[in-house]
Image 1: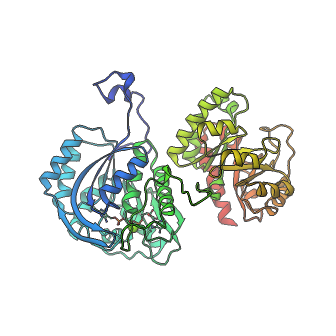
Image 2: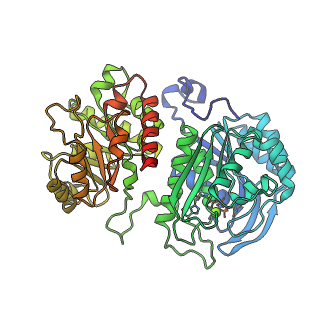
Length: 522
Ligand SMILES: Nc1ncnc2c1ncn2[C@@H]1O[C@H](COP(=O)(O)OP(=O)(O)O)[C@@H](O)[C@H]1O
Ligand SMILES: Cc1ncc(COP(=O)(O)O)c(N)n1
Ligand SMILES: [Mg+2]
């Protein structure tokens, strides 16, 4: 739909171009999505899911309804298509008024309906188009028949920025191509890409015989497999709609396509996990809760889900390096995350408290919008004040058991350990992970005793906790670190290898690639 390559940021002058009815200073731009989809009376999927996920992600969502379904947790009882002329009126109404960042489509059940959509999109061009080619509900009901296939293939897919078919839909678009394995999902993604969309995500929620829930993403050159353990629940009604709308919401906020897809996958995963036991309706396809992020489960003592795999590429900031390269902390972090950093630690040794707090708040916004956790080095007060995801403390900082009692059960706590004794204590005190090093000598931390790869291994073996290695690690030696034989070594933490570099994005990508390759080699 657009020429922005999926990596978009607000134009510098958006304030002056956005609205003319109020003064420039008082304008606050809200990211906006339009969903063009069907209504689900049970409110688990369709328009209702789209509205919920956008609200949960802080994005405004308008809705044009194409069809009304009589639907519940047992299935779809009946479908009523709205007249194409009336759908066109709805489209004109909102497209002529709002400034949508992204249009997302769901159920488009007739050729005439697709025609009116295409006509309106050509009358009112939008910046990005997410097409979820809804054809079959999770319950197996046909929501759009084969009559729409040719207009999808010939006219809608070629203008889409991303399409998100499930395996059945991908197969239908490819004349019945069989998709039963991840390898076949890859072939399907490639063939669908040839039909014209800029990105393809083939969703594997319904892939038979797979213990993981795997989605295959293809950008025309590279494949990415997005995996998460399959959650055992009946409440998967609306996962497809939610995923596509979450991608639209993240794009509307300015994310790149891959970041948007990753955030969306994680959102669905967290929502399913949070809602796996809820019972709504008596059928086999229950809805899930999109607002898990706003709630705490009174039954469980730990409710934020710390994923040890997030330690994979752990970026630790350094303000002197940002000054040296003349970039803001926010730009540095954005580049690190876009390049593949999976968790961030804000380490600030010079700033005054007020300055540190303001910085932390700006960083949290960036991290939250990318679905990446942000930890604060040492300063429990700053972590509390800005509601960071957790802290990292050293052996001479506040003791971990005290940190836990101050921060409560939900926050992530990491602790630096050089010895097996410290590692054992970290676990007893309630830490979530260990940072172990310095593995190699480094300029970032003066007078720091190095422990080498043997010391790292001893620390790993002494604890049940996940470990991230730190100290003098970069592209040249990250592979040797990951190859020590320790299953709880989850990743590497780096400072200079990312931030004391000309291009943070390039270095992050290279390091991520190196780590992935070395992990595969184990
Ligand atoms: N049981 C599950 N556990 C974890 N993720 C799931 C599960 N079922 C579906 N997903 C995820 O939900 C998203 C929607 O997938 P899918 O169910 O294949 O689409 P649709 O709802 O369109 O049929 C995908 O990201 C998929 O990986
Ligand atoms: C109105 C409408 N749109 C889309 C879906 C597909 O949702 P899912 O495949 O997740 O059940 C649905 N069931 N109803
Ligand atoms: Mg599904």
